[in-house]
Amino acid sequence: MSRFPDERVEVDYVAPRHLAGGGDPTWITVPLHRACGWSPDHEPLTPNVVLTSPDQKALLRLEPDPDSQWWTLHHAPEPTAPAWYASFGARTPVEFIAAVTDALTDPDADTAAAPDPFEVLRQANWIPTGTQNGLVSRDGTAFVQRSHDASPWIATVMFKGYGTVWQAHFGERTPPRLISAFTASMTDPSPVARILDTRRLPTLNPNLVTRTQVGMRAGLVAFALEDRVRTLSARHTPPASPPSAPPGQPPGRSR
Image (cartoon, rainbow, N blue to C red; front, side, top):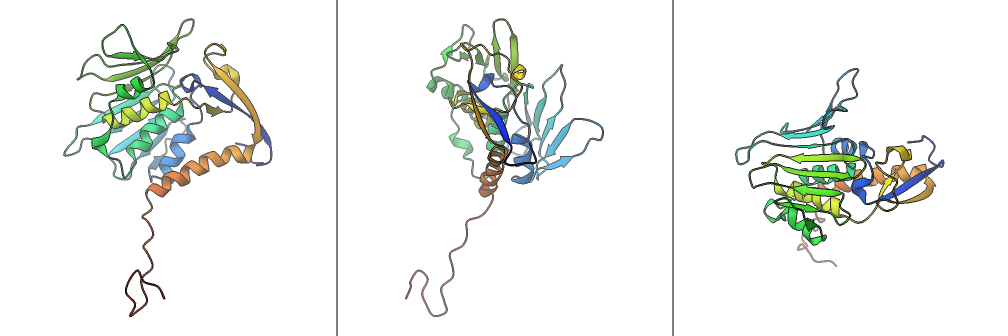
């Protein structure tokens, strides 16, 4: 991001979001550190980023590797839950991964109320695939599959002439609410903002991707991340206590 907040930058708003490319990793890493208290581990002379949750039970690693998934999220076993993992390819939009980490770090999450990940897709009019337990987006480029109840969940984006754009894997023990958060982000129709060289998009085919370019001040672009940090920080801030009543005056009454 430019050091000059009044400098103009060109922002592309891209839809559908699953074809918008990976985006800025700080959308995930900065809020985890500043709003949720995750600790960064330094790996000298490498491009790797490692963040560990305050309770030391979860670890997020960003490890650029052209031959494997770039993002991995591991969670240690707990007395009432087994260990689990999730991984995401380089071109997985950061908004999708952030939906998972936001759900994981939500202190008020209702773990019993999570919808079926497939039901989220059905409500967005995704349609069954030819394989068992699979749904595909209306444009035919995004797929979510689970072959049976004890298998991992796999989300795949691909299209003819390109092949696989990205994949996300969720282990069989991954909490369903996190997978539902991911599928809900996949079905969000709103475009995502990208500051990019168009060569970083998997396709410019106007039949698949809609791009709207907007010129805006760099300071406004940076504000989006700061606003996200503030919003997530507020989840961990206890509500202010009401002022105590003056001596001799019953609480809740005023003069």
